[in-house]
Length: 291
Image 1 (tube, rainbow, N blue to C red):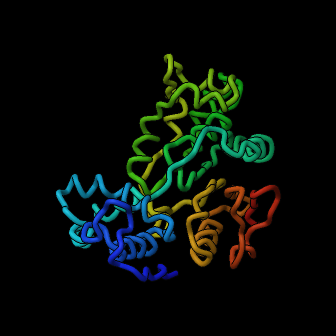
Image 2 (image 1 turned 60 degrees about the vertical axis):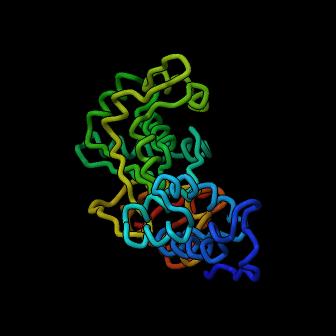
Image 3 (image 1 turned 120 degrees about the vertical axis):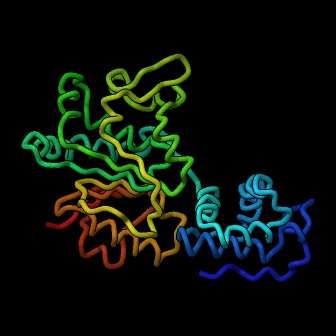
């Protein structure tokens, strides 16, 4: 998808900002970079967002103009990745789309625990985990309401991968400390069992931390992943992609599931294309990999 051509490049994109500092071609270059590297489509309405998110990076690297900054990231792959991460949206919260966790608890969890009790590996992936709220909610549901039983579960061969493109989001997930008020969406018994509340902050407890591995990962790049997953959560990530990118990502996710494994996607997302031959819709935005 190509960015729309801006017909008046001499006019400022942002009131009070000189076109010599931030021009129409600068915005188009940023949009092209983000589309190519991360599959994210930046519409014309995102001009202010691009400026506000990247201006601090320009100052940090002593670049007077966006053109100077773009030349810098062309030769600095790490800075290019940081630039893309700065333009991603990491909005999430605990127990989001709670029907997914209800389904996981009633329909998926018993089979996972049965497999784990036999010594089989159980693998879960929170793809696009943002700052960790999704994966921590999921792990609390997995360990459950009985603390003694949950501790035994935590000692089995269960690993959850939590990945995100944005390094700052991954670091927040690893830190695993959140506003106590934000955690109240999680049932009290789960919070009491698996978290430690200290005034206005609540930290994820050690039983959960042993289960989760956080990694920085671009979903459009190569996946250094050998195992298939029993469960994949990839929710509200694809809403920023164009149609072709969505279909390709879902196809890859479907192929990363074990037969009988489950894929959970966002409420406004749908499975289409080649992946439709591999996945059956079994609930609201819940899919099962065909045997």
